[in-house]
Amino acid sequence: MNNSQDFNRDHNQNLEEDLLPEYKFDYSEARPNRFAVSPSKIVTVELESDVAEVFKSSKDVNNALRAIISIMPKR
Image (cartoon, rainbow, N blue to C red; front, side, top):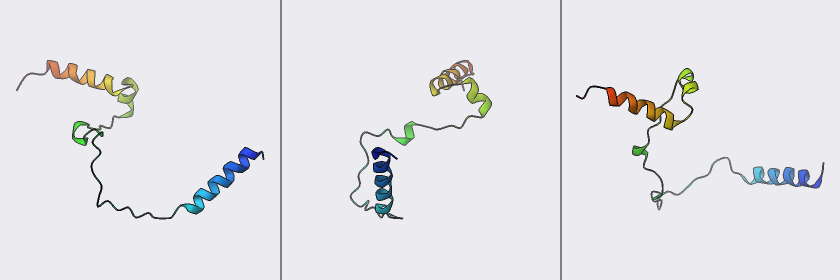
């Protein structure tokens, strides 16, 4: 092994020794992240594999759904 491999192995071993099996966090003073997107504005949908093969991005899916919505009768 060369010096960098020795360092990486030793460094990783030290990290594993320092990690505790469980950490207790004090959330009593936690505040919402003002820069994060609100979860209510993003919806995650799982696509079947055959559909995912056709639509490579969320933009493609949204464009197709908007096209379908535009031809739907208004209620």
